[in-house]
Image (cartoon, rainbow, N blue to C red; front, side):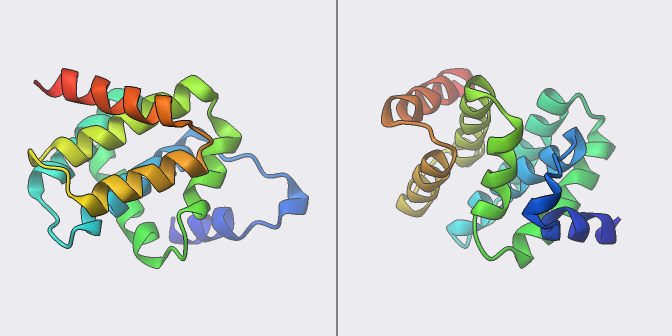
Amino acid sequence: MIESLKKLFSTPETEHHKPDAHHIAIAATALMVQLSQVDNDEDERELQAIIDCAVQVHNLTREEAREILEQAMAQAQSATSLYEFTGQLNEFLDQDGKQALLENIWRVALADDRVDKYEEHLIRRIADLMHLNHREFILARHRAESSSS
């Protein structure tokens, strides 16, 4: 499995390899993992929110979502930039899909009942890399806040 992930992330651009839904789930989850680690306080509620998002969005069982989380944690740990993940997501998701992903990223940030400046900054960078404007950034936050209350 690790070898197949390495191939995905190291495939030359000339091959025009389009990632499948499983790889997209890992990329999206890896962004959420990076968010959960940015404040140096990985909270169990944030990890649970990541699993909940994976179950809901990707139609996975909780066990499959935990596997995705483990794979995403390994990828996030070895990643050199957010672009490794956002590049794949931009290729696969339409604007509505990107907006929904950003909303779920906000849900992870809100899971521990606080959003610190590092989390907000990282979410802003992710939004920029996914070509989402300020209005979409704010709208995603408001939707996530509304659904968590």
